[in-house]
Image (cartoon, rainbow, N blue to C red):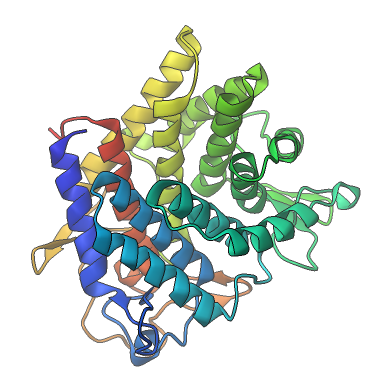
Length: 371
């Protein structure tokens, strides 16, 4: 793989480690990501808890371990998992998308970094399997006791169930539900979800990324043509509608800070795993690769540098802004109606920096020079 992207991924990892990683409440053998930099006192004490951001931090640590295996990083992965368990008081919460992301990162930590956690994976699998309620219109819901069935829950849950515990049939049911329920016939993108039977027509990069990931995973594992065809079609739609000038759209800070990172993770996987030698599949692989690499070049070119380490912006096609050292009241990210809004300076948000890191790791897997 290309050394330039390896070096940039290593720099992104070092930036997160330097600015965000901290013991949970000073407890030995723990680590979590402080949710903002510069942090407030509340941030430093981990009073603010964003479960799924920490799951993506774990996933990024696994990416880094694949790129550059080190015993000390394996220990960081262990500490991150322990920190998440303590801070969350267990593995489970009320949001199925959150639990799907932690399940995915734990599965990868076991398979790719040797940090095997069968107990938590069994608990999370049971949560996701038993959430399936076709009689209510799903799909699995976004959260417990909710009638919102969306791609951000069903996509990652489907990817996980395809990978773990021989649940391919359920993963295919989830992919088929998304196709039948959430496909926009005009743009061929994926709508957000359905709430109490009504279509929520928002179209986020997040939704496209997880569905590309699910369909690509099923194409590889089942060999059934419909999954390959859907993955190829969606990659073309992302290219047409969500990557102006070839660079993937951003979605700001807060939870939105993770959207583009998630999408490039699964575009890069599609670029390297989609099976088939036909022209359509070759074009899809090439398009996915081009979006990831163009986004990575642009994000790197528009970064700021603080103490020799990169700071990424929430929009990869415009210059990042170094946040002020002091955060005024009300300028920090706020948790509202089950989601985290952006900080006044989105670059503060761990989510934004994790997406930059994910992007550098994704570019590295594609083995391209950075010129």
